Image 1 (cartoon, rainbow, N blue to C red):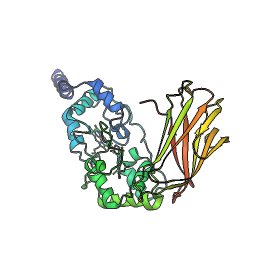
Image 2: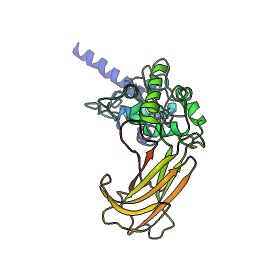
Image 3: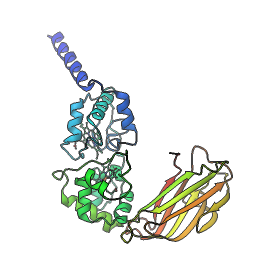
Image 4: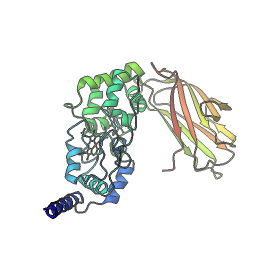
Length: 338
Ligand code: HEC
Ligand code: HEC
């Protein structure tokens, strides 16, 4: 009798393995897509599928059919992803990759934990999983919503009908050819309009929309010594719609021992120690960066920065955040070429 039961168990586990490892699917491609910048599934399921906000996927022997069901017709609060975002082949690769990983002993922590005294809209954004990708205070989203003056009707569309509405928003984000949209389409039966209204009101009225600023710090390839770094700051807000950033301060934190040989750009104020950066910073101050304005700043350091790179921040006094920090800040770091 005992032998018989074991026989059945072995047969069952062979069937489920065969189902998970579908023909042509390969674990390495699944891992590459999971770890790379084309999907953000890991924001909810953990960097190795160990589980976090969403359930664990590693070592559970989920089949590619189960992956397809979950991604195309999620039964809960996970958004649905289109073929263009993750194809059936991608999902089969995920299934094979996770079937081959050991089961995690415990789920990992949520990427963005719930704050203790959140407002209603924030609590909803956390409980629905939005914050796992957008962060606890939706900083980037509030810039885009502010810069393009998104009303609630459009906001709703960007959530329920994301893969159609996002490319129509008319901004570079989500429009880059070859880049897949990371957010899926939410089901109105799972996330109500009322819940979305609370999130929208929280971003607009409790925290406040922001100017749509973008900062890009890169090494200047034309400098043979390799120690010149260029910062491009742009207000990508729509003309006459988006807010200007006023009383802007830009800091680039200097690596220990480095000095500034040369600096360009409007409003350069020199170098001074900064408590927040815990380093000497090169500073620029500008009265205003209005929608469609683009400004360029550059520093030449005494020697090129090492692997740790270069970091900085951009802060503005107005429009001021309605709650929380006194000054709105955005951090940026040196981008690798390409
Ligand atoms: C917002 C967080 C979130 C994101 C992003 C997300 N998931 Fe999920 N996922 C969940 C939750 C929560 C569940 C549980 C079912 C539900 O709520 O729909 C789930 C369920 C699943 C399941 C079924 C697991 C089971 O136990 O049967 C699979 C497979 C899955 N997700 C794969 C993916 C893939 C692939 C992606 C990226 C394309 C992804 N998920 C993105 C939250 C997320
Ligand atoms: C898997 C990560 C992820 C989750 C979960 C997610 N978003 Fe997004 N969202 C993004 C990204 C990334 C973009 C930019 C376009 C893209 O790549 O899809 C975006 C875009 C948006 C936009 C358009 C403005 C902007 O910031 O580009 C809105 C509005 C938005 N999300 C709201 C929400 C709400 C509300 C929820 C929860 C119901 C949510 N998102 C859940 C990743 C996510």
